[in-house]
Image (cartoon, rainbow, N blue to C red; front, side, top):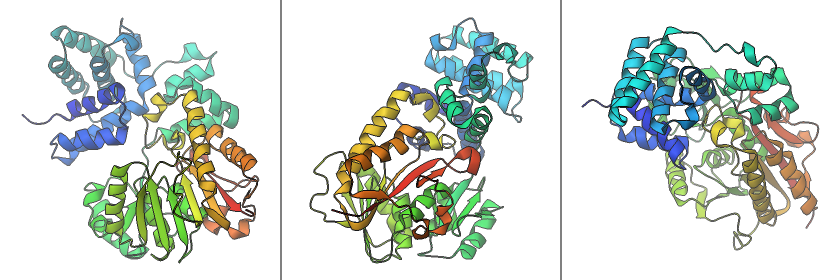
Amino acid sequence: MKPDPRATALDILSSLEKGSFTLDTLVDDILGSARLREKRDRALVTTLVYGVLRRRNTIDWIIAHFSRTPPDRMDTDILNILRLGVFQLRFLDRIPAFAAVNASVELAKKRSHPRFSGFVNGVLRSIARMPGQPDLSDMAGDPVKGMSVAKSFPCWILRRWIERFGLENTGRMCDVMNSIPPITVRVNTLKTVPDTLADSLIPEVGRIERSGRLENAFSFFSPSVPVHELTAFGRGWFHVQDEAAQMICRLTDPRPGERVLDACAGLGGKTGHMAQLMENTGEIVAVDRDGRKLEKLRFEMERLGVINTRTLKSDLLSSTVLKNEGLFDRVLADCPCSGSGVIRRNPDTKWRLSAQNLRRFAMDQLSILDNLAGMVRRGGVLVYSVCSIEPEECEEVVRAFLNNHREFDIEGNKALIPAEVSGFIDKNGFFKTLPFEHKLDGFFAARLKRTDG
């Protein structure tokens, strides 16, 4: 039997709600085992999954208007079958309505009791007969609730953003977060140069956009093959990395011959970039508590030709961490966070994040910084960064850290910071990228210099 991309999409969506795995992990695992050989089938899976997650509030509002059973009382699989059907009916142009309805009904027959297939058929046929976007005129008195349905974001997030950015900019923020981001890559200058990489990519990706901010950043959409199958990827000529993430490494500004600690190294995106900036000299100690990530990091460094890095498994929440490692010239603490700045890449974040999570993340972030403070040599630099735009994880963490560590100050002299990033530093010395303003992932960072101790 030919694998069904809609069934695969359903598996991913339902597993996401039932378990604790992240979206990227589920997509890799489930899509990888689905035996979908055709590019268009794999593309349909990702379109459906990411599309449903981006538009889930809108979709659920539509379902609620055509179903006697509220979405929050439905079986998980049936609700996600309806969501997939509504997304195809309202947000995809190339799939005929009858095909979207019939495929959803067949999926319901295979996954549930036969009577539910009739329910799915009735709801979707009713929706198909009344095309168009939701009529929100009855929500005119509650702009937050109306925006929550129209832009598909939780009300609690919208209220926070409206208070800080205003109603118009919050709408723009939602639009950017709901858009499909480009694939942005960093040229690996350890192996090639920008023009050579561009010439290699064009036959496989078509149009390339060169960054107006960073010399070694390119963006493209819809490559002819998965990114890891591109010829230049196999040669180690690039790493996938948003411009904002690249700027964090430029802000850290590691120099050739220095000793650098990459705390919370993850899969090594910033590790490889710093090695590149250091011209493969000196030493980078890449630390993470997840041994599987470190294994992938080592493989990635080999692909990129990085030779100045060693890995160390350790939990940075422990106060005794790295006690035998000595001091470092630069420490990058790219801490685990809410991910509120990268929702366009991880739309599931909208639905699993809560205000309580923000406080929990902030406590862990401050603990990590406290434990790293003693690892920075006098005159050295500690860079704190998160892919978040929420104050609890950003300014508030830095201010709390500085209150506890008088030996550190914010690097206030922009002349000491690379020009590519100095324009993103505000009057308080904080680095910020905002999706609605810069069309980049949302990042926050602070460069802290140890002046005494």
